[in-house]
Length: 476
Image: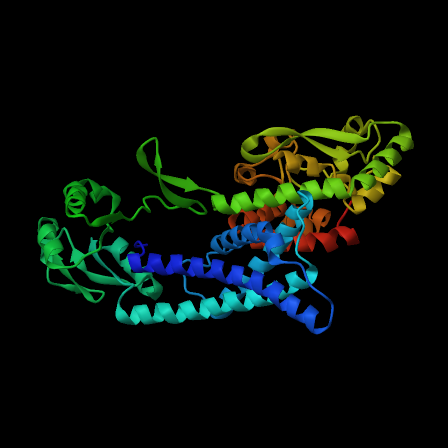
């Protein structure tokens, strides 16, 4: 995709600054409105906004990050106003959840609930109005031609045609095709896709001098790249950006990123489509959420530990070796739900395995204790794993980690689930858990999560996990 014009960049920056200003205005207005309401009904004075500047600073940073990771400022996609407003709503909802959890953990006082409620309404309205304003602004600038970029395409074959078809399908990219440079001199003067072939490689300098060209796009087969060395040097000399289409190899799921590695330009084929900012927010949420759960449920954890100990005098926790991201092994912990010699008895039950593939699962496992059956039904045995989340070995949302002993039986395509950090719950848990007996289907759900991951998907899985756990649906 051609790079954004300078005007587009400024519009994007202005939109971000406007959102920050609107968030600050909404925060201050919420306090002002609350004061007016309290005064009108003789409730006395209210707290001052100055008491909560620390919350405002955190809110501004968090709102900006959440909007950015949801591509609210992206120029590469055109979406409906309703879709943009949904992004605003998600930002406010997820942002408040993270903010409430973090402030509770570090003991920072949040504004009164009435202020938060007023802020949600005012902030939502102002951010949506911002989107309407910038839609009109971008439309005006497009009509004036201020956002468009002029490109010259080297090549006129199948690769060039695919690229231009994509450009034509994305009017928001604001690309103006000036013409083509082709290696075949017989094509000079012919027209293709609304533009002429202006010359051959030796004519490039003359073409650059004759037309206001922002970028030269090399859309040629890989075998011809060696012939472009002089043209690339000429673009550099003339101060014109050169873009080489990099789809040298086809891939099913990998995302191709151009980066600088060891001072060398490289192409990286990533099998996980995750951005650093999104992963940072995910990790911050994991820390806040897991720490909050461990602190708030500590009396329950102690009670469960006591019941297990009183049952047979055995160990409270069951520890086992599991495989995490990039095959990193770590020790997982659960409340023990089986008899003390459960691992020794497993060999006798192999023939009863109901799960295909590498995993061992059976209904009404005779090794499970009475207390253990209750703990498993409501996933209470999983609570100690929040410690693994806090340490960073696991995440709240992610594919379930396999046992170390199960990994050798994984097929090659199934190992891709290890490309992300394992989690406590994922699509498998909310799709029936143990009622799914086909291991291949289980892994496909994990891969679907990896390929479609977003913060919003994590939020939806978390919200669906709660009723699934409380109902005990699919538990064994």
